[in-house]
Length: 172
Image 1 (tube, one colour):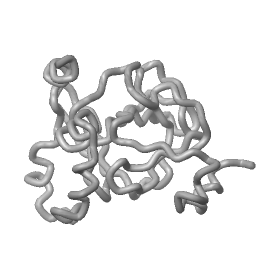
Image 2 (cartoon, rainbow, N blue to C red; image 1 turned 90 degrees about the horizontal axis):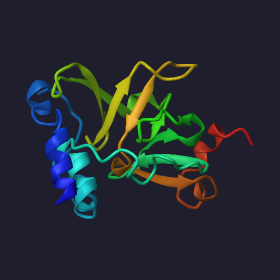
Image 3 (tube, rainbow, N blue to C red; image 1 turned 135 degrees about the vertical axis):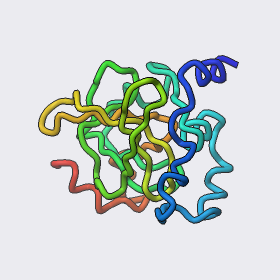
């Protein structure tokens, strides 16, 4: 009930009509991630598929400090690295850069009265969060991301989970 009220208050942002605005985009095949989506919790589904926003300071990764990478909860594509994570004070995981810019789609969102840049996973089309230009150096950007759209892979598990090639991100 609390989650539903929160989602109504903060709105379900800009997911609707993305395909209508971008009819030639080849982003996702209809059923490609059907099984993965069935495994999502209610909040994960609302965030990734309906552009909901999870509560600040009450989500899985907002204050996580472990070393590792954050992958798309649906496709498993690496998106963010703990090396680029910082405490923005927003209550959501914040990063100043992505692992691979080509894995992120950006679109404008006007649903709360002003323009924001919505972020989606290019592979799964999952809503991730928003991009702001108030982040730290070296990029000055803040990728404000919903924990519900991510899965964390610990550094020590990268080999076992098939993400060995991302060890280069950590200066060890």
